[in-house]
Amino acid sequence: MKLALLLLRLLPPEISHFVALNALNFLYKSNLTSILFPYEDASEPFKFKSLTFKNRLGIAAGLDKNGDFIDSLGALGFGFIEVGTITPLAQPGNPKPRIFRFPGQGAIVNRLGFNNKGVDYLVKKIKLRSFSGILGVNIGANKTSEGQKRIDDYVECFKKVCPYADYITINISSPNTPNLRSLHQEENFLPLFEALSLARNETKYLNPIFIKLSPDEGEQITTVILAATKKFEFDGVITSNTTVKKDNLRYSGQLNLDGGLSGKPLLDKSNELLKLAHSHEPHLLKIGVGGVDSKESFNSKLEIGASLVQIYTSFIFHGPGIVKKLLR
Ligand SMILES: Cc1cc2nc3c(=O)[nH]c(=O)nc-3n(C[C@H](O)[C@H](O)[C@H](O)COP(=O)(O)O)c2cc1C
Image 1 (spheres, rainbow, N blue to C red):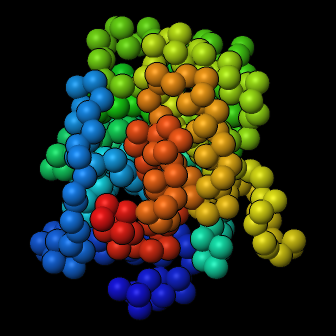
Image 2 (image 1 turned 135 degrees about the horizontal axis):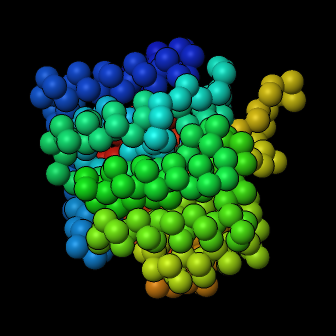
């Protein structure tokens, strides 16, 4: 396993992710996943609304944007999988290179920019899944959509995925789609929240809706958004997306590192946001994500208010073995 991970690191990051996920799919289809990656799950199930999570560990949005790997990821033991971010239309994302790995620091910087195959493709994939755990869908807007069209994009994705999603995440925090984070401003998120609330009523969607927050917005903006999350009766927040701040990452100044930083250097920052969210809105559900790569960092999120925890970067560096480590 260690050798496979080392070999994967020799490939450019995006190719390596592609190869690794397709290899997982191959192992799953050959019924080899449980033999090669056994895990023991002594977790108590966690219940929220009508959902039962078999454990509190999930895979974060962005790893399986199009729902191509739901079953193979599910077979590794995750209690829940969040697919997306998905947009109404397929789009290529930003020019490459757009993922940069820092294995020594357990960190990644990405500026993918919501590359995805579009919501209709995702829905087809979800319908075909056999994974019986909780499936969340993370939704966003196309890069070229502005103003009302941007709101319409979220509503379109919401309506298309709601018959199949155990929960829906509203992603207003990606740093890689121009202006997306302006949705943290009240004049922008209020019309979006109103439109989604209306869509929820129209579709009679009863499952949870979460808002995914940025760790870069500061206390004042964040508290306003938390209060609005509660007011619109959304169910919780995901803290956090990647950060644009690279102050605690060591790298050569010549490298263009525009984009969001994830992994170990994000742990404290995402935990601060989680604490803030929990102190202001203790009754909202919190999903903690950012920098979890050990049982200790996993527990740190649960101790400060998260009910559920997601990982992304540590899965890239440690492979499926991380699931066993965190669930033990
Ligand atoms: C390559 C990459 C792509 C990502 N894509 C998305 C995305 O499409 N939507 C989203 O909400 N978050 C996305 N994220 C953010 C993760 O879901 C997560 O919030 C963040 O990486 C922090 O968790 P980690 O430190 O465990 O990686 C992405 C992260 C990475 C590294």
